[in-house]
Image (cartoon, rainbow, N blue to C red; front, side):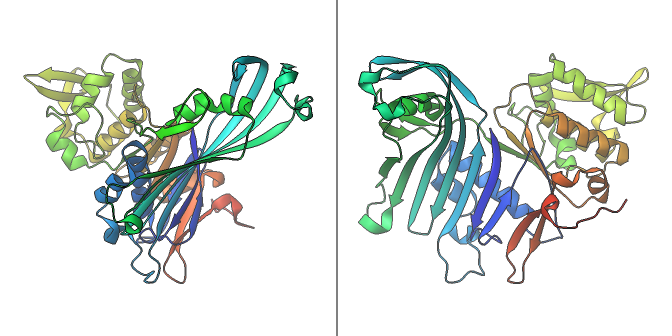
Length: 403
């Protein structure tokens, strides 16, 4: 899955803003341009998708903290996130109780839409499937209209929309929750092909593909990191949660519990050997309930307290990038270049590109921009009305790079 587009309206500094995203997204902008607000939006989406929209609003400080303060007359806040799913293939599709044999290939696009005011919330999922039938198509004619006789190679756009609405202002019932389901297709053999994909994104249907409910996911889709080297120095030895925290403060526990006996541990250790002078690897120990990160330097080991902020930040970034168990598909890093010198920055960029994850970083670094590809750069800026807007560098006519 990949996040391809964001539409953000009336959320903090954003107003009627569309942001196009790709595999690597290096977000650049002046101070107060809205880079931190973009990270805030991504966290809001993740909370909404794996908990619920009301929890996301609460975690982000409530409606009054979220709403664009300069848009006085506009009440509704809208966030839409469009995701692209990899191609899927089904070899056997069922039409009712009669098997339909053949191969269907489908490419999915899912749009999660979150809109709310002080009085109501609406959450919807729309599924757009581009479906093609190929190879050895055998239709059961008595169950299908003859106009589908020549199905091979035909393309269909299937749309399934699922809406959860909690409109307290309409019925004065705070616990009211209304569900609306619609589809553009009556062809059940195509919708059957969607069944597994619908299940993957949380849409639960019966055997006749009547959608019954939406299950919020228990896994993260988007994980954000803003490493605090001071917190890592002070707290990384403490017993804590295993999952790496946003500020990296449980780095020791995470490395010990998730990485120390994995192939990823060697990757992380080698990254430090390659980029940091005199470091020959890392070790992790558990001593009386504390988790000690040590750096090998020749025939001795040095503690986390004695290495630079850049080394700690680089280690935390490589650990985040190489988690052996991580369900999130998008990793977001706030200014990952902090305290790093050029060789470490170029190594980090290469690691981002080689990762199976989608990556978004915010930065002020000219060194990152110098080594970034034009198609990886996203500019964030304020327009004349003070609203945050976005443009990808490779869409700007006659843009030239200076070396």
